Length: 352
Image (cartoon, rainbow, N blue to C red; front, side):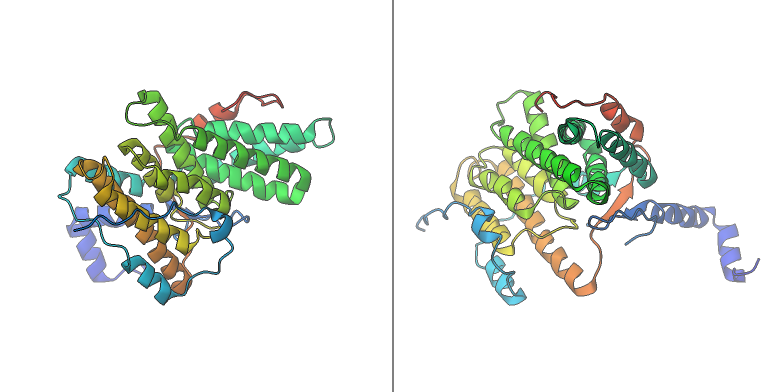
């Protein structure tokens, strides 16, 4: 056969495991696809001592968002300035959780199925373009997608991509409906996320699960460029300032991890460094972290996510690599998402 050397034929025929591995890698490469900001491009090609005073409360994005980005040398000094959290022995179960969350953060349904779902939503919105209440109808669809995004954590990235594609399509079809839809998504998602920050370790399991689901979906919206950095900072800051339980740490970890590989504007480097400094102080001076190694291990991992975010930003800037690379998980079914969106929304939907 043309294109195959004798050595390749010999190796493949004599070692089935090698051939199986090659085929598996080939299939894996076809499972990745990319999204470009506001221009959906579904592709099957690859584009992971004395006690010091506590730091001041984390600044909101109102002042940080307008600052120019820090030069690389300033950023390095800012990261090195705070003391590091003393390392702890790794807990196998916790480490497995961290790896799972990192490896599944960008899992989605098939990109063609996502595009088809987005087209159905756009068609439903534009069908009411000339009817009374058209903007309320678009906003109702935005709220419906938020409800779908926070319903199943494993599908939150898929729903976020649907939201991105709907925003992109409406931008050219109807600017007024685009604004109504996008504002409803941002307002309802941030509202749902902030409303669940009160859950802690003593809250019912359902309340804690809803808090984590909302955090994951909001991080996904930021990663897809739907949520602005200013809004994201306003959600992160309260968790950093008042991380008083493992549940809050889990929510903050998911929020930052899902937002790590993004295609929109960056979170200000000064804001991330300030968050890291605050977390380091809490790990060594605040309860429950000074008494609970497991809780302190959460803060270490959150700081790792922050540092990876800043490092990844430098790599993308230097090498021009797109961080918006998603993975098609064959175990995810678009039918689940479609089932959450089958009921036509109206302008008077219930609160999330």
